[in-house]
Amino acid sequence: MAQPGIHPTAVVDPSARLGDGVSVGAFTLVGPDVEIGDGSTIGPHCSLQGPMRIGRENRIVGHAAIGGDPQDKKYRGERVSLEIGDRNLIREFVTLNRGTGDGGGVTRIGNDNWLLAYTHVAHDCMVGNHCVFSNNASLAGHVVVGDHVILSGFAGVHQFCRIGAHAFIGMGAFVNGDVPPFLMVAQDKYARPRGINAEGLKRRGFDPRRIAAIRRAYRALYMGDAKLDEARAELEEIAAAGSADVRAMLDFIESGERPLLR
View 1 (cartoon, rainbow, N blue to C red):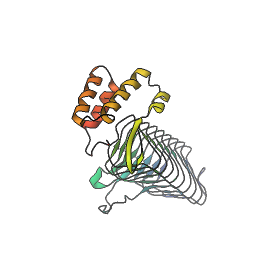
View 2: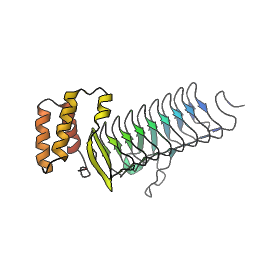
View 3: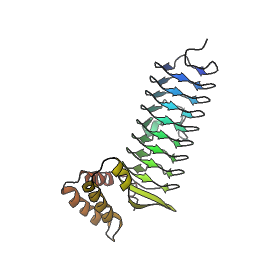
View 4: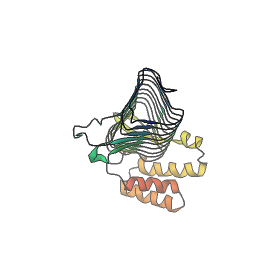
């Protein structure tokens, strides 16, 4: 007899650990070494492969493939994992892969994210909190995404790139370089900066003084003929005048491994 909340056609491995109030839909497979936190809902026709830990109160809609092997030819079956936080919404046909041994061994998704239909998060990615990935948005391997980032439909991010907090990536943009915090980028063959994400910052309580400092930093980086070193010097002045946000932009720029999107 099926457990309460587990559909009779679902297959749940005996080693899987399901918290209180977890429900599993019809024809869903929950494999070995999978942990699902209290109050989470797994829809029909899903595949959950471990090692994987899913937090509390997540909702995974039908036909999602979560915790699959990394799509990397160097993967040789080593033990790698996927970690998903709390209160995430994962919609139809989303694919989330585990990490690789050479890439740190773990793919990590934070809390309160919306991953909409057909989105893909590849091996060794790190996704923050309160992000929205619209339909068909995709991350290649080793991508780092900060908090409150929005990826519009069909956006794609090249491997090893970083997207800073509060950035907005427009529909169909192909991002092949680091995107600093607060920026809005749109497609022009490759993604190019198109201003700061002012509307999103207002919604999150940024006051006019903070936004003005970010806008000034954007102009220094992108709207003149200044070389990058010259623009960074101007950002240093803005940060020294008391802008922690511009300081965060500088720290982001200085820690990058790929060229700055410029």
